[in-house]
Length: 401
Ligand SMILES: Cc1cc2nc3c(=O)[nH]c(=O)nc-3n(C[C@H](O)[C@H](O)[C@H](O)COP(=O)(O)OP(=O)(O)OC[C@H]3O[C@@H](n4cnc5c(N)ncnc54)[C@H](O)[C@@H]3O)c2cc1C
Image (cartoon, rainbow, N blue to C red; front, side, top):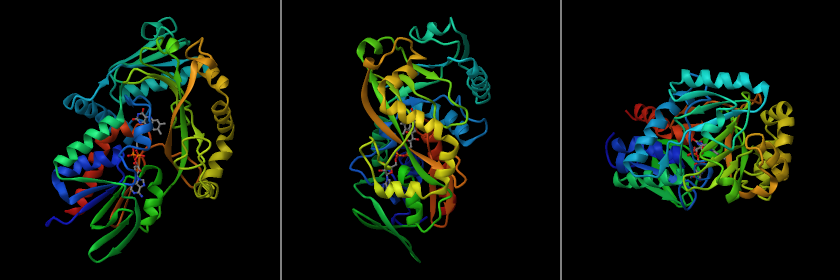
């Protein structure tokens, strides 16, 4: 690696792109650039998530999610401590409310232990109130390793640290074209042109499109799933100490609507999971015909829909009907009513769907000539970001050697 020409361009100033830049910056410094389409970093998934530092409870032992979540979580706690980023290792409570959830709760405990968690405690119905007096159920699991943070603040600190290494984040630079020639790759963006040897695609909701811009065929298609939040009114918020989660459906990569106290003290319920009508579809009113056509012409979407249509209808009903959402939440927190929920923000998940209609569960990185594409980085990718960044950086540096 010689010369000061840009060697690597990372597309996407979300937490995965920035964490990858952090891992590459010591070797590349100003020969590394991050492009971000929006005016600020972390405007999409990173800035609109639940703000939870996940423990690693849910993931299949040995999967990329499990390994990077475990190491990334502790690295993130360390990063927050070193840089005085407000965070709290508050723990979380998973509550079973139906007999048929007990087997899944036991499986979570088994996975948690296999993934190295030492702060797990199985709880009886009576013991739930030791952690969350407002929660009710038939059994529970307390996980001490879980925490909370604002990922926008983490992203801002990453940007600051990159600048100190000479690595630039160019905001307002949306990648629109890639031309390959003998010198490398010429990238056309809304801010100007630049050349590089290797492109790292961390474009989140647009990652499959960026893959196609590079002339490569993505192994999956992104289908956007919106997660909507409601804020709890103060009288209800006071009843919540930290995080109260349901037992998730083991067949789905979503964790179920939960109640979370954020690092700023507010308490929210959510996120649900409804099909978004645009990749940036933060409400039902945001519709993109182009995005809809892409989703609806993808055979994988129809295979997915044929399996999960009942769940989809129920989620959509709860999205449109706040009383139904309150009823669902009151299983975890009895007494919660429609009037206790105020509409709040939303995030859109970039969920990779395979051609045979599976919601891809694990992280997916696709290597191609001249590019590394991150094609599935859903939750817990914010928690795991610093570890994912190191994995990608290793691949990139091996390619440049
Ligand atoms: C509702 C919700 C709740 C979640 N809760 C949690 C949680 O509590 N804990 C957790 O660990 N994870 C959580 N996640 C997951 C986590 O937020 C994501 O996994 C993570 O933020 C992904 O980061 P990213 O950098 O890949 O994507 P993003 O943050 O979406 O960043 C991608 C960036 O690429 C940019 N971009 C796209 N196209 C281009 C282009 N052509 N040119 C230049 N730039 C481009 C976009 O503008 C964007 O800023 C949640 C996600 C959602 C949606």
